[in-house]
Length: 222
Image 1: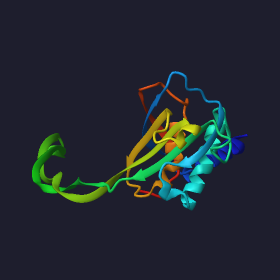
Image 2: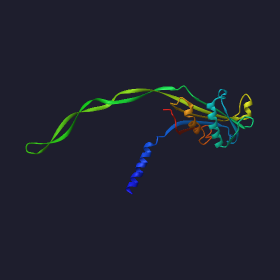
Image 3: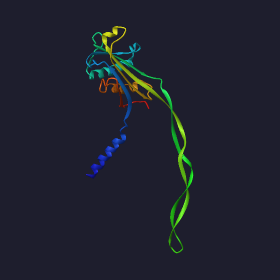
Image 4: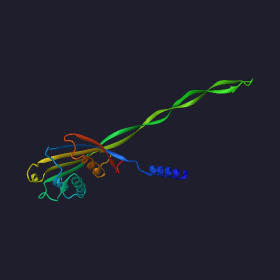
């Protein structure tokens, strides 16, 4: 029995040591929508910028958005003629802002006199206490190292409009969602899934309120 218990404990400890630490991305999501907005009807997902019409990157994101819209109650179609609504998707990363992070360096700052009591014996064999002094090092901050980091702001935007209103000069918007994060990823592809996940948590969310969420992430960014 003891062998089984120890083996089980060793197995658990080995798994814990091999399991990677989970990382999370902090996101902020805002949603604004008309009181009549409902997650039902047919919908087509389109780029919010015509320059993305032939983008393979957009094609990938389009599929991901379609899955999320289907999960909340919409039915997907592939053109505006048969759609009740159109979801217009945009995504972007800014140029980033640099900041300097200082890390203290610890080392010996000098030495000080310390003392301790020792026991010795006199000629008669009687124990006596002797105070002995010695030099001990002082440890403290001796400097700092500077590291420059760049933080980027990542954003996805999703607007849902009436499909037939796209024929007019001004579309009729029913839903407006924005999710942002900030970190060291200079490309949207590394955080798109996490931002989209945050946008669709409890979709459509509270109207006109911000939702801060930490979404579990697998990313190649530091």
